[in-house]
Image (tube, rainbow, N blue to C red):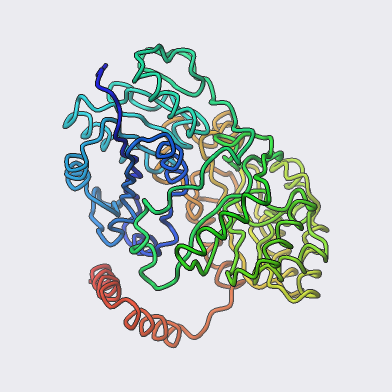
Length: 489
């Protein structure tokens, strides 16, 4: 192993991989705001390391190139990434692999980095690495980080700089390691400095003119839905930042960047209703003038009228709930949601009473679902729509590594060990089901999305979006126009 002192660290988010014709979806800058790397950078910078972030999608989300007949990569090319590393001159490069669909792309990038810079310490981490550390080719990677990475990476760097053994560092896996130990969960989230979002390419992320950021106020989830991979990194215990700490961060970014929108990434923002109500009350009292979103939704069984009134006062215009299925049996026996459909119905009614928008997430195509089960889900979605639920997102059940669903599918032969990770995405079906094919399920899902969600006249809608884009970001308009013409012809 290299013995040079580590002073400069580069954190890399690899490009995205999409099916041909779908790359336009990645043009939306909301796909790229790497809060995880920003937290890592914030802690390392607090300890006097020089840190840079290279988010390869955010840096060049208009660079689309074919890699196979049906696949495209989106973002910086490997050649440009190598050039960036050469120019920055890091002692350590950390590569994040949050999505399993990035596995092959990321491993090729790692191989090229290590070939070009054999003396650089190369570390890999994030969700996919934590879920399947044995699938990461160790000949190119010096260390893996398993679980929450902030302090694990910091301790690794300190150990290397002091020539100390890393074998007792939890969450750190060396080439020689034969066991995988999860990093200890950070019990006091206030111990973390604010994420170094200033190291993200904010000008490119805000190309549309909106100034927005992502935030988290909590980590972990006490629930155990079979398709959710949150536990891979964050575990089951819910840890909450102090309300003072969250308010201070909102005010910090509002003062520096005049932020207009904040997206909470929490999986359990309102599970502790008392804490959540106080948070929303404090946000409202500060009159930030910011629009807030709970991107991953809130638990319907945590909702009461007071909570929704406070959310609205804080600046939430709407929110999502997640019934997941229209079958209580599927919720109880398949998903393990630990929630009643009556809670979702009540939440929609309360939202309409308070005057705040409400939307819903559903999941279709679990291994033992029948057409009758799926139709029950759509029928329940229609019922919520009749009550005033506004928008719906239907996902296809996806067996992400690290989930109970993944293990169940392997056990029952619904997927195989050699499943193409690139196909693990929420609109694709990879689960073998005796009642329907993947193509049939995807077609049904797309029809149901069209039925449930309101659509303006296509020509009028397209013209309005195009005109707005042409005015606000003419270069982006030309990129999208060229892309559409390329796909068409």
